[in-house]
Image 1 (spheres, helix red, strand yellow):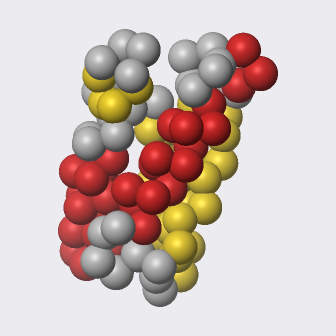
Image 2 (image 1 turned 180 degrees about the vertical axis):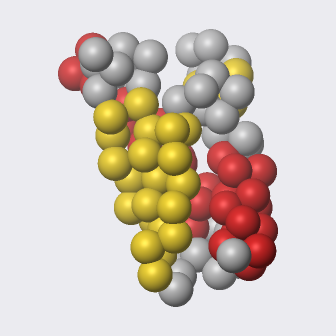
Length: 88
């Protein structure tokens, strides 16, 4: 559906603003965002990974919360669920 595609596009654009401070690139440009889907009206699910396992990444919590906050700042998104996919 075009409306869903527009919303997902807007979310991806906003996620480009989330920069990994250690690398200096966005989580989108680094390929960490694996999927964005609309669960229901106002709710989205974002599947993401990190460059290393989360227990080894000192910025894991920061990145996850930054992705959630960025997605929830997009008009039409009330809640963003983040699913972390371990990179192994």
